[in-house]
Structure formats: structure tokens, C-alpha cells
Image: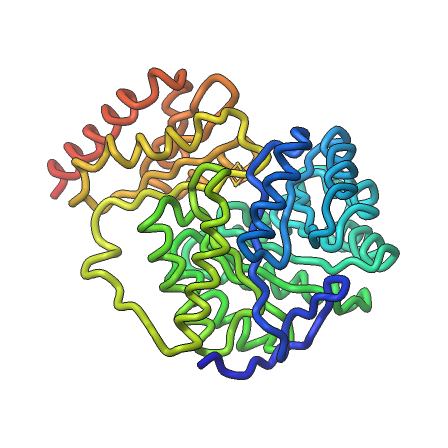
Length: 379
Ligand code: SF4
């Protein structure tokens, strides 16, 4: 059974979210937004799979023009994902139903303007166009002042950043908002969302394990977090993030609905023994920002080519773009983020080099072998 939730009910147009409303299942288009036909097909594919809401990334005026065309061809509820260029909100607002901003990306533009003023700008746009808002905090891109104050470890920085933004939005007299606090580790997703809900039981929560990676591990990580949270009455909308080709994106909706049905029926899956031990591959689910379509294939190859290191407690992160790739690979032992022609290889926060898509796998293996050798020497 899914217990009663304490959150207030907000609306995305006529879709209720929070409180006694059904849990909203959503996903994100993975096609380049400027490829209008492909993006319309992607929105339809997600709708047909049962999505209540579809998110689209917009980073430029060209993306906004494409979004207007997509809007004209679908009645689906659309959310837009704004990252660094938060001012695009005014341009996208006529074509969408919800805006998502990331508190960790607001400092990039207009550094002399206060966070409060930037949030006020977004809230004004939301009010004027009757849009809902998501404050989307992500462990891979936390606002620098929160990292300085609370450190990288644990959940304090992400939870406090979310709470701070709620205060700002509350002071601006806006209530139609939802919060997400995501990490690639389901245990931290559980801890962060529980901590947030204990302080703000009124604010609807969007659940997700970011960069969960490829099935089956990506599904297992997501299920661990959703079972623990939703069975405690935490979570009003969810997004499953899986690294799969964009023609298979309906799987994210199907998995989300299946997990909800299982929780409702009291069917809980046991976590496979030693699931959190050994090699951990995290990979982003891809979105419009992917700059080379070989990303998904590369993520699958990384998984295959590194399987020999299965017993080692190491994390390899594979990310699809330069927007979130550099930050979201910092915490991994080895990280790869994809550009148009080159893949950047990192060891922790340090860049090892940039390599073509044909060169990257041997380079990755060499780095992995060196890490394993060093850890054997030091143990
Ligand atoms: S890392 Fe980049 S490509 Fe991957 S989901 Fe995030 S924004 Fe999209």
C-alpha cells in the first residue's frame, strides 16, 4: 500500500500533483530538441508508454524555436529543463506547462546578480504564464556556496540547497512548485529525500536516481530508492533514468509504473547480495544535450570492457555532454564525458586527456589497470 502523503496538491495545468493525487510518472526526451520530427516522435513514444508529463531540454534560441513547433504538434504536458541560461524562461514559457531550474547552475550567468533575483525572475515568468516550477537539485552540480559550507560528502549540501530555494520561492508568494534532490547512489537519494521531507512535509517531491545507468543495474538502483521512499509516503512524481537508446525510452515509463504497482501491491524485491560492492558504472540517461550519438554505445562498451574489474570497489562515470559531464564525473574514480568528436577521460577531478571515440576504450582500460595495481600495492 502507498500511504497517505502530507504534501500540498499543486497543478500542472489540469494535472494534479501531490497530496491525494496519483503519483505522476514522467520522463525526458533524449532526442536533440532541434530535430523537430524526432522530438515529436519521442514525446509520442513516451505518451504512448503512459507518461503524464514529458521534459525537454532547451539551451538556446534555436531550441526555443524547435520547441514551439513541437508544442504545435502535441497536446502532451511539457516541462522544460533550463540549465545555465535561466533567462530563456521568458522565451519558452508560452510553449510549456512547467519549468525546471537547477539551483547549482544559476551562478554561471550574471555572477553579480543575486540568487534571489534570479529565482524571482523565474517565479515571475511562472506566475505570468501559470506554470508550475521544479527546484531540481543534483548532487553532481551543487551551488558552490553550499559545497563550501556543508562539504561534498553526505546529503547536507543538497538538502540545504533545496530548503534554501524553497524559502526564497515561499517568500515570493509562489506555491505551485515541486522539489527534486537527486544523486546517483540510491542510498543517498533515500537519506536526502527523508531529511527534506522531515523539514518540509508540505512540499511535493519529484523522485529519481540520477545516472542510474543501464538495465538491469539502473532498474535495481531506482527500485531500491523508490521502494524505501514511496512506501513511507514520500514522493509525488517520479522519473526513472536509464541509459538506453532513444527508441527504447518508453522503458523508463514502464519501469516506473511497474515499481509503483509493485509497491501498491506490497511486492518488494530483495536487493541482490553484495549489490553495492565491486565495480559501479554510472551513466546519464542522455538527453537533447548529447553531442555525439555514439554515447549510448560507448556506455555499453564501457560496461562490457571493464567487466573484468568486477570485484574492485571502483566507480566509473560515463556522461553524455559538456553541460553536466565535467561536474558529474568529479566524484567517480574514473570519468568519461562526451564531446562532439572527443571523449574527456578523468581520474577523479583531474583530466587525463581527450581522446577520439576509437581511442578511448584502451585508454580507459590502461587507467583502470593502473588504479587496480596501485590499490593492490597500497593494501
Ligand atoms: S549529462 Fe548531459 S546529456 Fe547526460 S542527461 Fe545530463 S544534461 Fe543530458
